[in-house]
Image (cartoon, rainbow, N blue to C red; front, top):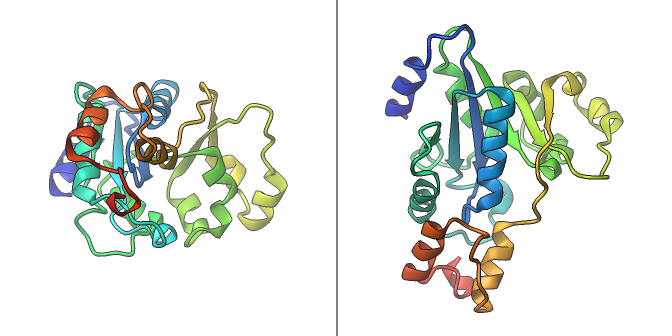
Length: 219
């Protein structure tokens, strides 16, 4: 995190520095992740978006993940050439379990004075937020950003009952809706089907060259 700390402190001299965090397993990273990050950067004026691959996510211990080093390499390939996007090892290099609030606190502690944190998430993750570890602390620590789902209403009453004040802390992004998921990409690979245009071409080649996801044991 030391390099990232320095980068955060050297961010632009604008009145408000806005940092986006996109967490996940990224197993593998795909086009949907990149579109969400870019739409957030564009619509919210973010100066930096960090992709943070989870090393030991508590809610996915039943799933076998590809080694975190592979997932980090794939993110690096996917975001190469975009100076606003960065990959962070903050979860990969510390012992688990890795809870979102702990990762956000690390970023929060290194923000320049007056800086703002935005945690990017999918619509489904927002609806499940009350079940997360210390969700009220997460809502207080950063702004939450979720993409909208066409014709799918958000149950604000449920969220407000569980997490009072959350509505004021959430920004909804209007963006293209893509039904792409990492587990679907894995399944297509196991079936010998194409994943071209679902993941960046450099990521597709990386997966193919290393034989990732060909069987359940490869995941």
